[in-house]
Image (tube, helix red, strand yellow):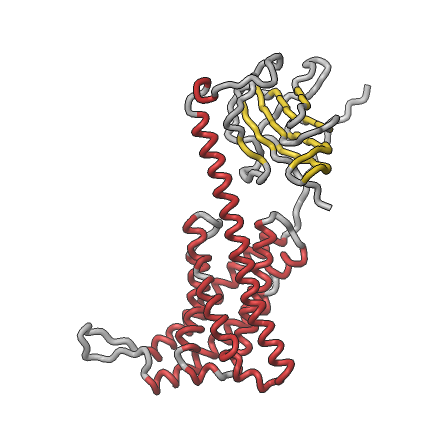
Length: 377
């Protein structure tokens, strides 16, 4: 059972952190303030009605904890419509954010209206004008809140994109599997007719993955995904879509299965990474299945291109002969022969790239534990 978190509104001065927890009718909340963490648990009335709420926050910098020498630096005030916490910072400084991680929980908000006084003796309802006390801080916090919201929107978009692509490739595999179960090998020749449009659509959608790092949505380079996606597009649109005789060949059946199998593993893995979840078996599949499927995929793509060369010799499709107004000549069969050589080189490069990723991701993690020195008296 997932325990909900209440809405929490925070503000700061140079010396204190103020939290306003949006819960009504709270009695005896359980509040633990550690050096770099705050834990809260209570029963109250919030966004989910009257139930048990809790949250835990890893803080950007250390705060003072309750000790005999320092008294009670954390003040807890339970009111009818909220719970207020005032926590003393360990060092006098402005924090760029409340949390240790750049990602902010959706239930954590910035309190623009109330700015709690540093003096614990001030009344509960005292307000401070942050724009007068600290010029420019309001704009800074507002930009921070907008940045958090942008991160949340990007995360939602990436989850929806990966989910959509996963569903698309799953549909292709399902159609191929159902037709083969009903018709046997007779279904192979009609594979492109039944799933070709879906494959073309999800393949075009993959070009968004080239733009994601350009927009800062994801980390990583642009060249590698561009070459990989363009290589598939070359096979799908130029060699299969443009030549009807190739569409009935069994190699298309096998190629679509290989492409789709790779993607129905890859996209769920990306979704788990967005949620910061690690599923060991899925991670192993993501970084191991390519050892078998990538060579088979390169083989099928090469067969498609090689089989198409006589067809393009016959039809002269995409071939430009001189003389013409551009004074330019292009021989498509010769280009395909050169492309086959480039495909082999690109395959070696991609396999090395995936091997480096696999080594980095699946290597054993070394955990170093810090041990405190024990002094015998």
